[in-house]
Length: 331
Ligand code: F42
Image (cartoon, rainbow, N blue to C red; front, side, top):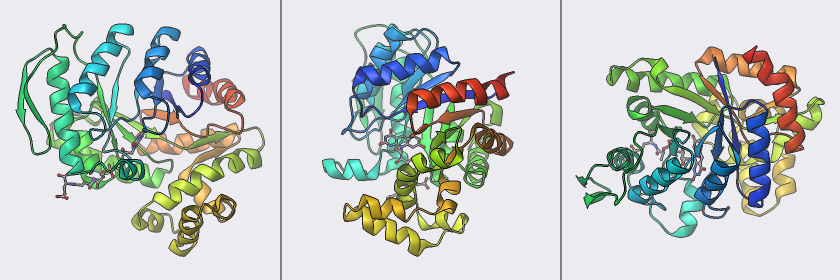
């Protein structure tokens, strides 16, 4: 049965995120993902609070990166979190968001290698081993915890590029695909499959997760309107190959890119077309969302993540998803 996850960007006060997390758990969500960017609230502070205020939801960073947080510190944070909520934590790790990383001046060197090495160090530390590791990006020279970690923690890899997707299939317990459209998920699953085969695993051994931009409201117009700002940023950040996959005019997206660079948000959002909303979000009435989720299920996902903006009113939209969308798939 498909799992439902929910993503929160902790740019709001901690108690608001936790309020929504409690609501999501009560309303039947299986997974809680908190994004990690230096310019929002700290992901582990929010997750620690979530550990105390929730009982069964599975949660973790979605996703942290190896550049701002060294692999041993990721292992330490996750092992500590696992003591607060035994067996309920999962690690989401990715290369890191280029734009926010650029602002810190930290160089994003060999992102694929960095993610692979992080997972290697992470897993060994979590198993309580003394880690001696000499990678191309990271080193661990006899690192070991002064406490006994509880043991294995599943690792989900945030991936978009062809190599990262394949690697995620090969070494990940799950993959977080940043996509909302079956065309993109189809492509991703094809790449993940290659990695799964290389590791002699089954596709069902990997939790294939669509990390979507989602917006639901009883009125279609209100749902899609709420998705527009997020879609503008996704379209602007999409490589041209993805725009071409959706037959979106690159010139129109260049206009959005220019407006965003100039700080003209009105102009940027005003240039978002219905095709862009279709390509880069799951948005609409509950029935429309159900239809779109069905298409993603056919493309091969096992977890659907309700991501930003969730809807014009987050609290009401969580309720609406829980009353209409989740029961459709979990009856
Ligand atoms: N990023 C954040 O910073 N915070 C978040 O909360 C967050 C959430 C999130 C959720 C789901 C998801 O899928 C992604 C998310 N991201 C988040 C973004 C994530 O951190 C990455 O930026 C995003 O997934 C894009 O990365 P990518 O998978 O496309 O990989 C990039 C870096 C890439 O270039 N991949 C190439 C590929 O083909 O997949 C591989 C490049 C390669 O092989 N490099 C070589 C190597 O060894 O690393 C080196 C080549 C050389 O230069 O020598």
